[in-house]
Length: 437
Image (cartoon, rainbow, N blue to C red; front, side, top):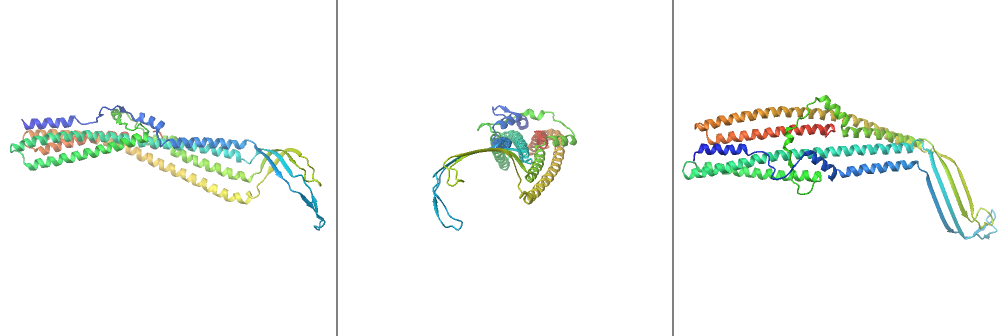
């Protein structure tokens, strides 16, 4: 058999058989994974529950506008009394009817609470809004995490295809070398070298498969997909046309859409509303009061009258907590400090967001430059491969030179695919940072 022709055929197999393999599984797009996570992710459900809880808290706060109604009923045993002179002499027994009973109904409708009820409702609304922003932030975190798993699966699947091709090629070359060794044209040292190479490649393949299993498990579990699902990335994701807007456009999008920034703004609003709630403690409370009572016996008469006495009233009552004049100052100072801290945290969040957007934008366009570089590397690797192949045909290069050239070409092609994936990754990173993922 012509050795050059055999080697050329093996190298062609290596070059043509790489890439992503689906292994008979259906392709799942990243958008489909996002939708699945929205409905089934266990890591997202607590955020939805917290949002529901905040809505119930708002209903509780609104109930503060309703009247307070108290009803009481009692039955008692009353012992006999006694009377004395003012110097406690001339003790005489005073029989009293022993059965005591009473019914009372009190109604208090708040009219003016100094803003306490209104501020409580407003505070509950702000907390509900903050819970919604927190849910958006958690959703974005999960989506970005899923995008990372998804793109890593794409990378390692591509690497697995390259590794399998290298293993197949190395095994065939090793078989040919063993045949030539029997003919006395190849040294045992060369065979040992290729056996070591094949062993290392097989170990790398095991590690790649293990990494793919881990990534697939993390993605499936995080997205809430059925256990045992094998995610096969959509290869068309590399052909998408992505926007190339300037940094200023992304900064504006971040200011308007970032849930992290919206959550920081909500913290400021909540602190200010809490401050108003503390101020309301210094104001009087006014309400309509109504009461009806019936009880007996009538003990204010001597001797007691064994009858029930019923009376009712309606009017306007006002109350003022005098201790708030000296107690609320400390609470108000604390609330003002909390508001100041929330404002400072908002300013820090703006700065951090601006820096993150700038860095992600730089990396995004840097990924395009990396793509150009890798495209050039593929071109150079292919040129080098053709040169080495020609020299090998003229017996001016060794077989190791040919394999090195082939590996360099395969590595360049793999890095080219990874460079395209990096563009997708940094695009989703920008979407995550700006709250548009």
